[in-house]
Image 1: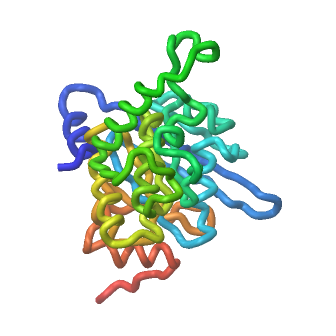
Image 2 (image 1 turned 90 degrees about the horizontal axis):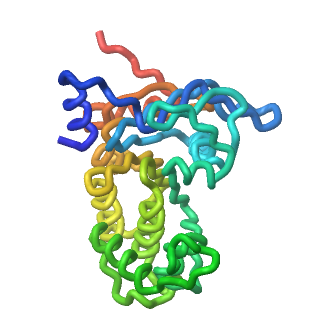
Image 3 (image 1 turned 60 degrees about the vertical axis):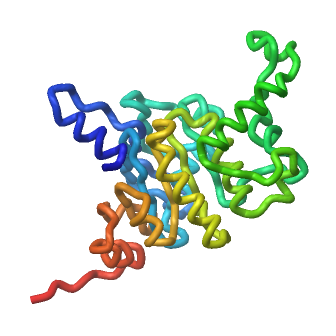
Length: 270
């Protein structure tokens, strides 16, 4: 039983159901004459892994950039833990515990693991005088090791520059950095793209562990239906800026998901 299923089962008892950790209502976004989002609704439960599917240009990137504050929606509302959230910048999103790992990873190849994890969020001593304190390198390294160990990431050299690491190791560092600051929602944009089989397996296993280990809910953007079936509790399909359907991903619904992505109407059998 997944973390999300356990949460829903607990909510079916006498205790009132908790609000979703993230909810988007009637989100719309225009870029000139193009309507990138057209009344999109999204609901992400605590501990849930939601697959966000759709062909190129379906609106996936616009939606997640609205959630993370890169774009501001023209109409609609975003709620975090049932409270309306005004997200107008990435810093606003981070304040609500929302982080994203995009395909380019946004890592500094010339820096090591610790510097990449804490760049702009360095730990200092004393903590309450951050701007006037000095870097607590030992605390940052210990915390970085702990986070990577909890994700079961094993690196040949902890001091090596990120640019010398494999694609899977770089992806793990990017995920660890996001997890360090994502207290509620982690968005992963094609995290297995361009990875080998072994590194892809490590990333998928990490996605499975994150909700239970850290209590984080995940939005996974992927074109790989097998990966969606393996790790996602629910899948939502976007097409031409609107939601065309939601399904529980499994072997039986894979054909349905593909049909919704490409816009094919499945014929009923007599």
